[in-house]
Length: 165
Image (tube, rainbow, N blue to C red):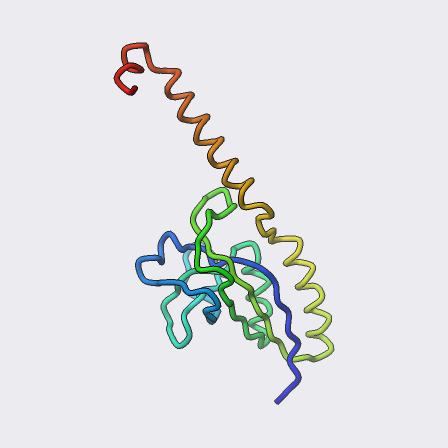
């Protein structure tokens, strides 16, 4: 068997808000990653599936799907291991829900692949940022929601305000 270079990084399985109907995530669960050829929204989409299954339970972040597909086309084996069974709000503008994971990329250790792996590490660091402070993220969500609610409340006339209280 050929020498395999391994690279691991923190990421997330996105789309749990949709896939929770079909999937019950477990901490330490290992999942397989495949290029999803038929994805209409992202031609580089990397679907995440339970071992031995074809139906996705989520996707790797779009920010890194293109570079990850590039490596998969060169023989890389990509997997994700859940680091939590709890979901969190996705930091992307579109929102959604994601579950934290550790992504493992294994690629044959040729000279060219070793050079490419260094570039891949740089791109992952540049393109994907793990939320640093979950508490700060939640506070910012609550602040935004509070501003929206109070703005709507201020627009109501005095009689409507009394009905709410």
